[in-house]
Length: 446
Image 1 (cartoon, helix red, strand yellow):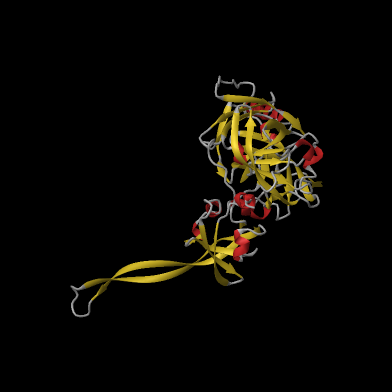
Image 2: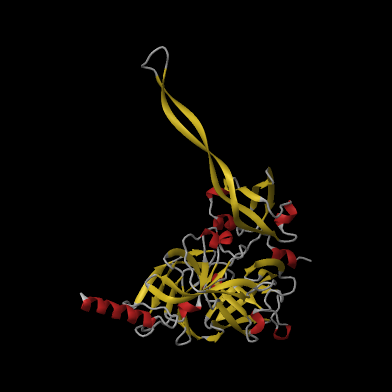
């Protein structure tokens, strides 16, 4: 018995030693396949933190795991903490976070017993309202650095490969790129067409953004939106606040031989990206709406990125033509109708049977989809919609029966589509109607 216990202790000691440098490992496997959900162009993977099952966004744009949405996490034990300030995109101030050391983190069969975690208690830093499903954090570099990561956007799975056993396959339809790094974040070179000339861009690979392409304005290099072909818009929310800027289109975006046409492109304002511009070589970001068109192999160790077109490659780029930004924000009480059938009898003869239908109603708590931003001079604003309005029905469909992304999909439909909304505004039901508009075509008119 003593000998057996000694062997177990030696085995555990060997495992602990392999994780002492804050690294992930697959102790007995060469690779591990993990299914993910693709929501709003974001990869959501299951993560276990100190024995608690959570959901994280796989975000190549972050250097350390960040945990938020803590109000909905029960029984989570956190080790060895210290308070720090962290900063991200957005025009606000740095936010307070807690750094926790020596945490146990599992992603599939990959484990790390010495993981640093940064916890944010600001309730506004939360993916859940924007995605319509629980998300508790983001993870990037700490996972990518230890594996060759295969991302299959088409079939919605990732594969973590051990670098020492992985062998590249011959692929004539693939393109391979050299990666560069700045503060543990990966960059790749792409090109955009401006006045019939292709301009090279140094782009952050950002799987944690649902947009297609972000470009930092630079008049000297011609990196500005085309005149009369952009509109001011809300671009998203960063760690340091809301991000605003201009939305436009780029006629051609190249990643070596791969060419994408009429690519949705955002030009964030300088205040929102002051932190990101500390990397003076950075030109912008290439994100989920572009990346989902490829199956990808990310190899940090050898500084390589491999892309192969998938079934999404030729999908048209769409954008929100309503001017409405909605979130799953709070709940609403819904009166649901329940019919129950039963047998009845005629008073004159027991042989005369009839069926009675009795209607019952049940009150249920359902998610509320709330308007949180409205673009100036948009169809929604001109129709009279306001921030804080709760969408009860859209085109006669009750929104509590729809997922958030399905509701958003209505606003990305064809130009001219009629949108009918029933709105709850401070307890009063109101009806609004508007048609989706192509902002770019409007601006081309004299």
